[in-house]
Length: 259
Image 1 (cartoon, helix red, strand yellow):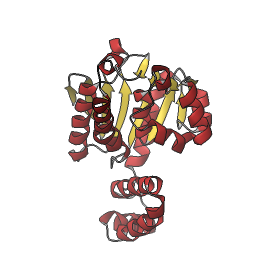
Image 2: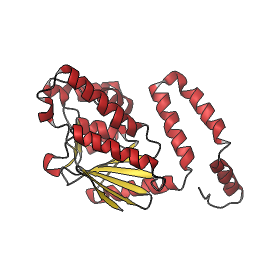
Image 3: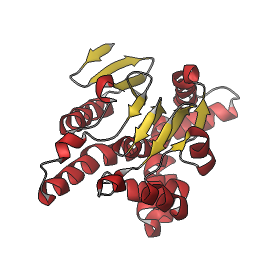
C-alpha cells in the first residue's frame, strides 16, 4: 500500500513502513510543516497493527535530510525559536526515540543539523558509504535544537560530540561507524536491503518484548537512577505475557516461535 502526502511518500509492505521525506529539490530540509506531517504519519503507524517496523530515508541520492529550512528561521523571535524546538523535540524526535516499534534511519546522503538529529532519534542508523554527517549550527550562531547536544554524546561520547558541535564540520560514513554514530556502512545499492534484513530478524522475535526493551533502554539513558528498577519490573511482567509462554514452549519443543 502506497500513500502520498505533501512532503512524504509512505509505502507499507511486508510489515514494514517505508517513510521517504520527498523534498529532493530542497535536499529534504525540515520545516514546521514537514515535522507536523511526520508527526501525523508516526501516530498513524503506531496504531497500525500491520506495521511492525519503519525505515526512514530521504528522496534522491544526495541527502537524507540536509538540515532545517534556514529561511524559516530568519524572522523568528527567541520565543518562537523556543516553541519550534519544543514542538520538534516532543512531537517528532522524542516520538521516534520512544517509538514502540523498531525504526531504522537509512542515511542515503547528507544528514546535517536537524537531519542528523532526526537520524539520531531513530533506534538504529545504517549509512551509505557516500553519507556525510554533522551538526553545523554554530556556523549560524546557534546550537542544535532538536536534541543534538543530548543524543550525540550518548552515541559518540562527550569529547567527539563537542568536537563535532564546536567545529561544525562533517564526518564521513566510516568515521561515523568508528565512533558509533551509525551501526552499519554499506554501498548505496545495499542501503534499504540491509535495513530490511535487520527488521526481518526483529520480526522473528517477540514484538511485545522488543517494545519493552526499547522502553527500558531509553529510561536507563534518560533517567539512569530508574533504569535497573525498570528492567526488573519489565523482566518480571514479561512472564505474564502470551509471547513468553509461546517462546518457552517453542524452545522446549525445538521449533520456531510463532509470535
